[in-house]
Length: 36
Length: 182
Image 1 (cartoon, rainbow over the protein chains, first blue to last red):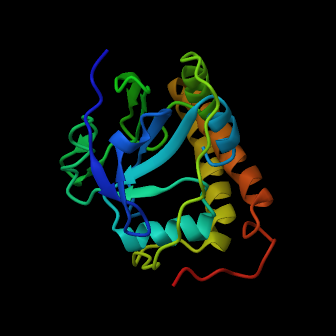
Image 2 (cartoon, chains in turn brown, yellow):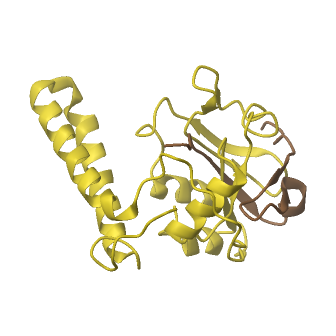
Image 3 (cartoon, chains in turn orange, purple):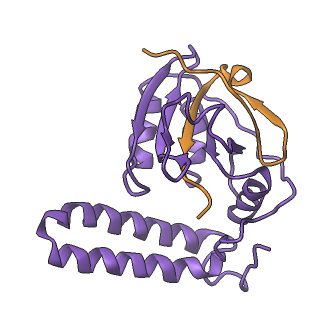
C-alpha cells in the first residue's frame, strides 16, 4: 500500500489541520471541485 | 457523507473535505449545510490535492475523489472520478472503512469561521428546484441515449437522495424562509 502523503492545511476557521495529528483513526479524504 | 457521518465514526474514520476554495468560502459552506466535518482549503493544490494525485490542471481544481488513509499512514482505498457524478457512493466508502476493522472514533463538530461565500454560492432554497431539473434532464437523456440508461439511473437515485436529505435538513426545502448565503 502507498504511503499517505502528510499535509497541513487551514480548516474553515483558519486553524491548522495536519494529517499527522489524526492518525489515531482512519481519515476519509473527500476531494471535491468547489467554487460552484 | 454528512448524512451517515455517525456510521463513519462508529467504523473508526473521520471525514474531511478538501478543495481549492478559500477558508471564507469553506466557512460559509460548513455553516450553510451544517456539515459535521471540517473543510480544508488548498487553493493551489500544492499541499494535498496534487500529492494525492487528484489535481485537474485545466480548471485548476480537484478531481472528485475519495481516499481513505488508514491509521498506519497508508492509503487503504482511493477512487478518483472524472466528474462530480463519478464518485463512489457513501455506502461503498463505508464498506471500505469497515473492512479496516477499526475501533470507533469521534470527530468534534467543525469550528465556525468567518463566512465569505463565493460570488456563485447557491442559495439553499433554490437547490430542490435545481435537483429536480437535473433529475428530469437525466431522465430525458436516458430516453434518447440507450447506452446512458444505467448511468442515468444512478444519477437519478443520487438526486433523489439529495432531495430527501434536503427535506430533512433544518434549513432545507420548505423548512425555513429563503436563506441568503451572503
